[in-house]
Every structure is written in C-alpha cells, then in structure tokens.
Figure 1: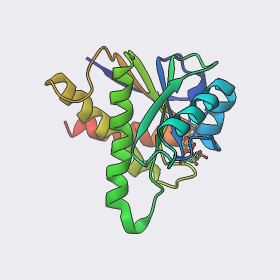
Figure 2 (figure 1 turned 120 degrees about the horizontal axis):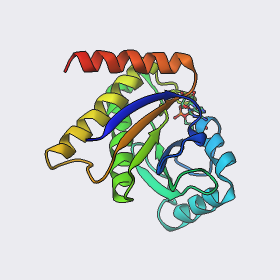
Figure 3 (figure 1 turned 90 degrees about the horizontal axis):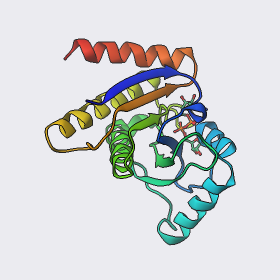
Length: 187
Ligand code: AR6
C-alpha cells in the first residue's frame, strides 16, 4: 500500500524518485518552487524543457497536464512538470478540476516512470493564488482517490511506496495536516 506523508521543508532536498514541479505553461522556469528546482537541478532540466517545447509543446503545456524530464543535479531521478490553474473566483469549479488533474496526471506519469516515491509541492498556492486550505483538500483527496482506485485495478498503481507532500513553512504544513486529519476522520 502507498503511504501518504506530509513534511515541512524544501522540495529540492528530498531524496525521492520523482519531484513534481509547479511550473508554468512556458516550461522555461519562473519563481517559487519552479525557480528553486531549476536552480538546484542545474541547466540540464531547462535544456530538456526547451527540447520538449520544441518537439511537443510549442503552444505551451496546458493547465492540468504533466510532462517529465530528468532531475539534473537534484537527489531524484525525474522532475514531473505540471501547470496548476491560477485561482479565479469566477471559475473555481473548473480550476478545481484542473488542479485535481495536475495531481492525477503527475502521479500517473510518475508510476509510468517506475517511481517508488514522489514528492509534491502545494501546487498553485503561491504565485497562482489558490487558498491553501482548499488546495490541500483538492490535493489530498485527489491523491487518496487515485491510490484507492489503483488498489482496485484502475488509476495510478505500480510500485509506489510513498507520496510525500512537501510544505514550505509551518503554516502550509499545519493546514495540510489539519485537512489530512479531517479526511482521515471522514473515512
Ligand atoms: N519547496 C517546497 N515548496 C516550495 C518551495 C520549495 N523550495 N518554494 C516555494 N514553495 P509557487 P504556483 C511553495 O509560486 O502557485 C512560478 O513562477 C510555495 O510556498 O512556486 O503553482 C512558476 O513558474 C507555495 O506554497 O507555484 C509559475 O509561473 C507552493 O510552493 C508560477 O510560479 C507553490 O508556489 C506557479 O505558481
């Protein structure tokens, strides 16, 4: 069975098979976790992103989609780049579906890559403005459902042992922990 774990820390320091990046559709880097991953991972990741853009994503990677590169100098095998939705009051429902899709697509890609461990940041909760508690609920319930589906033959399965959420700072960690406890109590 796959464990879901929560840690407070820096995702670039995680020794996992796959690190998920909260990228933007250009795939050319940015601030926040994206900037940190490219800084720590070195230029190979950006070179692969450029190649992916040239070969498949000239128009940009769409919200909710995910693509993989190697992890450069990070203590990981691959980086999965996904584009979260920007939070907008008038399209929360569509955004919720897109944010859930980021987690599902990234998880499936990680499994295809043979990952045993995956680390996620709190996608869309920085520059893209998604409220942390809502984002935590979407993240945790989507991953839990995907893993449960895997147990009954659908969804992402394979040899995944751990899905780790890496929260930047005690506030984000506390919110994720509270939502996780709530979900666990709700069954
Ligand atoms: N480790 C873990 N989490 C981090 C780290 C880190 N090293 N650094 C920041 N966070 P953001 P988004 C947290 O803005 O909202 C970029 O410019 C951060 O505190 O990185 O999806 C991209 O290129 C927050 O909780 O991603 C896009 O243009 C969470 O990671 C845009 O930002 C996500 O914040 C994407 O915005």
